[in-house]
Image (cartoon, rainbow, N blue to C red; front, side, top):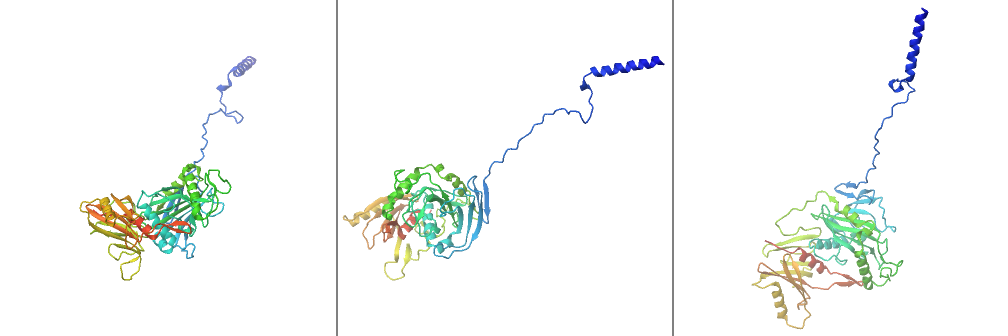
Length: 443
């Protein structure tokens, strides 16, 4: 008995010794105090979301605010304004929030306004003039875009557009227009770093809506009392007539500046403008009809017998055949109104427009201060003669097409008037621009 107990103790001792010498990793014991095996886990750090353009939509208007230009927009339906300073029909305004380049003087606001074009033209003489100027430019893409012929922001009222720089035609999704950098004032004001703004006047393709964009800008170069002579330009307040050289010098200075030097960058504002959509306006559809579509404030005159069509200001009269009359008098006699355009068509008999014009000059003889110049009208070269004698001073335009001689007379023709020392075109000059730029020959 003692022997068996002794043998048992020896076996137990051997087993315990063996355990002490074996590696512990052979025994996986799930004890709460044991250290777990380490596991390699891949962790992905979230990438910050890239800033995105901000879509804006209100009623029938939408556009996109590029990153960094503003944080959003506040929209409102504005009632009709009947005051003398800003007469207008009801319109829609979208004012940008969080705009980083605000005008410190508060003269200009970052906003988009959409007006019913015809109603605005009827309500405001300033709007009617700007719409006529805009329509005149959009029918002829070769016109030099200078301050004296560019449209103005109508609700600036009687303030003058002092200059226009960085001007270019800029289409948007529903139409076309012109953008520029300008400043407005009622006196010969200097052009300071924060006194200008980007503005855009445009029409939808169907002429139904007039879109105006206004955005304050900081200029990269400027000339006012704070930096006399720094850019070779010194501001000295004088009469309007003598200030034109100063404004022209500022215009040239800004035209040479890189658009990226403005704040905001002009291309960034252009992107917003190009994205504007006014719903319900038709897309451009190719047509065999060469006549231009009348826009706000204009009407279409078609003469199939004489083979032409053209646009003219709607407030003028065409009741007398082949005449477009400004302020018709209704009185008897050979003077139909304050001014007029008369279109005469006859056989060219193989003559060119130049030959027909020179024949008129030869017929009146020497002793007159007659000037000549040529332009393109539709697909033909037209010759313009100023100074031919007649009952009234006149301008005559000679065009030949399909062996037909078209003679268009504008009378009484007056050179640009000086009003308060500043150049101002006559109503007949506006009519001339619209007629010449929209005149088309019928097939």
